[in-house]
Picture (tube, rainbow, N blue to C red):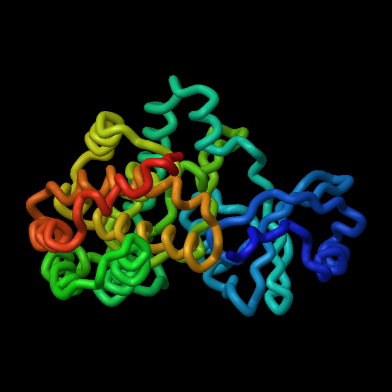
Length: 321
């Protein structure tokens, strides 16, 4: 089993910071994520910044820079780029601080509706703009992501890969795959949204943005893998968003949740990141909710036929987050 990565700054970091005008700054561990990216807080005499270490062998940082520029042009708060060295995989970013949506709500749950409404306002504003120069979120991408479920989840729980999975998704997703009208951040959730001192929201982890359906980021926010969103809160926020194709929301919710169930299993089985087991019951709760929509009928039929109830959330009852 692979060990969890140790947050030690890369050897090239001091020289990079020196070239960027941050020579002698202290480099403190900040966070790692489900990819190879790691983050450090840089503390200098004039303030703080965030150092992103994205090893070029594993991560291409150019999409992050392009999407950050796109968001800035539209007036949204992505971190300003202070310095970059793509050969070393190092980017120095504006520091948005520590007031993250997830922890803010853990500390004061009474703010839940207000902060979620603000996050809905942001995504509604984003949906008013064309997607820009982004790759399409099309059927090929949807199917590649959904395929992570049979590839990783099913063997992990002792199930054989069954026929008809791709065909079920082709039938169900056809209506939404044609809509590539807006910027889809793809990981718009409580651990990637910062509460900034001026009262606005800051965006993180948007490098995988594509041009797709407006319902997708609502799913990311309201069927959050890392924070339980009650059905009641979900319903209130969908009503607050306004006109929305609920069938598309359920379809993209099921597709995203199938993907995440596969990814989190892969992080456990391949990468030794056992903490991702704890998210599985939550993901199944969302998944079951989505599968009840009539638009998911072919997908639900496949799951009912080939993924027994005891191989779903019940498998992970001892690992709940």
